[in-house]
Length: 374
Image (cartoon, rainbow, N blue to C red; front, side, top):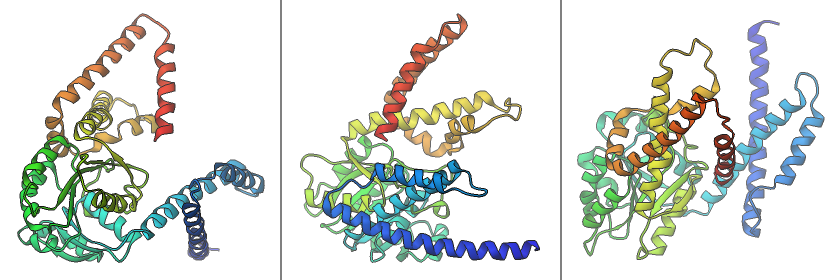
């Protein structure tokens, strides 16, 4: 049998697998919907364990027991995420949504929203040179250049500002003027105190729409609409920074839209957000870059998943981080100094041949706790 014939067989099997997967996902959606109605947990760990054990026991031929369980585990995880997202989206009413800035975040948001609720009507705004890919994707009812942006937001129920910090700050007064009074406006910037302070000034008129700061804790090394994906926000935190006086109904509408993308909404104050982001986002970015610079071509060709994983963030563009680190300078300096103190302790321990147990044991416990929360 030649390669072409073998590939034809594989193509037929793949088509059959996709049909079976679609049937499985539809059934999983029905189960997830029933669980939501009955207030049951989305995940039944006891049943999953039994399924994996059955997969190991039923493995034959080329597929080893652990390999069979691994494949099934992947199907279960994907199925659970898919069903949970679809079930959440089914309860979301169709909205008119404007997305300003169609890069990685804006493009992923458009895909995620339309995936779970195809009846949403999307309008997008970006530079003319960046509108070809969104236009080809067919998700948007209206696409406009910035000078025509008012047409994209003047009938919107919800407006997402998916632009860099400096551009978001520039746009706030204009969006406050163009968006309907009953609309909800939010952003995705990685700092919140500056944005919310500017928004308080811009959205203080009697006819101004409601604004609440937001920040999805998701991203990728590659930027641009073409790199967006509907699954970008699945399982990731999406921070909102409301005040005690915010309208509950509008906040809940926005929360429902965000959760329909698969994200987990977390409510923090702007101050709490910025302190946490300096620690969990900006510090890892700088540490990853520093580690990559330390290795700097001296790996002798034996680098593996550990180094690649720890330096993944080193592929991020500097332009984004220049702005963010300036905004959170005090918080970030404090965290860098804290980390340097631990590095100094470890350096002294290594230099004098001391056991590393107390650092490693404590780090092991903290890592498990972090994994459980995540």
